[in-house]
Amino acid sequence: MSRSRKVEPEAAVNAAMALFWTHGFAGLGTRQIEEETGITRFTLQTTYGGKMKLYLTALDAYLDSFENSDLMNNVEGDLESIATFFEMRGNSNAMPNIASQGCFMLNSMIEFSSSDPEINLRADRYFRMLRQWFGSALERSRENGSLHLDLHIREMTEILLSTALGLNTIIRAKGNHGAGEKMAVSIARMVRTWGPSEILPT
Image (cartoon, rainbow, N blue to C red; front, top):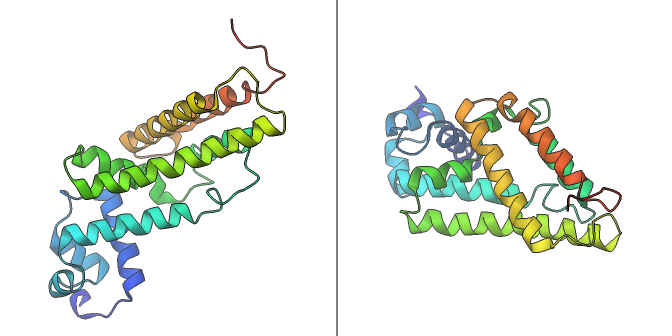
């Protein structure tokens, strides 16, 4: 039976992450956690400190994976990298199936509505990562001459952050990547208009 099998901690956390990502916190019971991750109710309490602590552990694993991804560590990222990032987010062939459930961190923020300090701390970390990456890519674009001089990097960074959150919200609402494909392509096209060769509206 699933409740008696041994499971490696990393595999258990990854399985819990997928469950919480799909069902949310409130929509997932301890019995389902036990059946689908191999984490017994006893282990849930003694090793992870309960359902909420397991949820936070899974969320930390998600953020660690995001922070260590090729995207976040792409030191050559520029304007085209940003455009490609959005195109990929709306492409089901380029994303894992679980990503059709949106962004795990964003889902958490929506479910808890700023009511939990632990979730808020992780949301702050997530925003810092995105702002850092978008801002750095825009700075490199400015340095290599591929960003229009009239654009303000801080303002563009906030636009990109808000747009990324909106795209993930649409994907989550529909439960599939295709729902965000047109939006993703439109965002990428908008980003490319920030280049110096484009005529900006007056």
